Length: 408
Image (cartoon, rainbow, N blue to C red; front, side, top):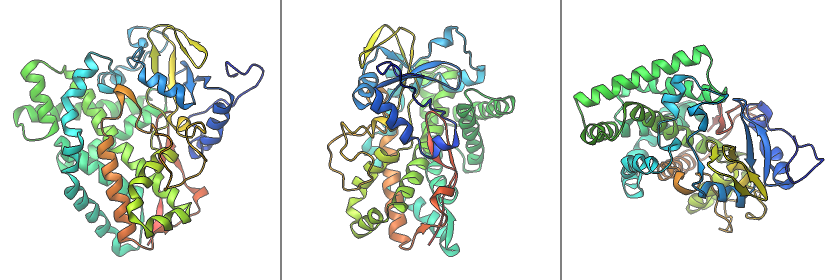
């Protein structure tokens, strides 16, 4: 397929589920970015889209509310997602446009503001120390399975009010959703798992109606009852989003970021010698190897020009955050991992505009505590396998490690 502004040059077509692309998507994205800001690509569900790979055009699309998140195919079209997929994915703040987006975001924004999140620091530190205490006698662990995953899933489960004994069920549901997103929709087996997850969420919501407490689900249920604020499908979809995004981002931030340190020992040593660099290091991890490759597609509500290319009404646009965050026009030595990088450009690992990630303050706090505590309490922490043997999991939107074996 050819870039619109480079006739005659054949470009690599990104295969978002290919193992090689997941392990290192950056060379393909860099070639696309050098050729032009937009490339036509084929998404897994068969829909053609414009892939944005440069910072300026990415910023334009994410800021412009004429690019909608509500997919036009929900009202008819070639691709029709399964009903359970629609319920779980397309009735929440991430896939709503104003004015409904504004109302939905206001419902949960207080639980994710910086002051409230900062108040959780002691408890998150307690959870983090407990996880390290549990693996310390072993001298080794899978940093994903034993640390990076249980930390954020515990935090978001407690915020929502999910009983401790049910965390396995929300993990299973979240994995089913990940599998569905990675496959473009869902196999019959995956659909069955998603239906089971929906049934569990219905039970959880009903239990909060009967016995509300001081948790996020109870607050959302009460808001829905008091002012008919949330439909039943919106409530289920918002919970799905909070569960999924509430841990997936942080798992990948910790895993990807620690791998970057392991494979850049001089940067690791610099951070060990000066722990005050952790805030800056975290931002560089988000830029260099952030947890999200791209947010959900945007859809043009009218004809709009981007990067010299006319985007027709109804066209899908996929903004590559990973590519924009390595745009040499904004970041000097963009392919270099440097925890002392100056603020010559602002990364967009959490997106931009009205759909800027609601959970960014929580992810940053969890990442800050996790990385600081790992380096402080495990001074001999090191990678236990060659980095080229590591396996990656991902889809067009997310990128993270299947496992990260370490010794200490």
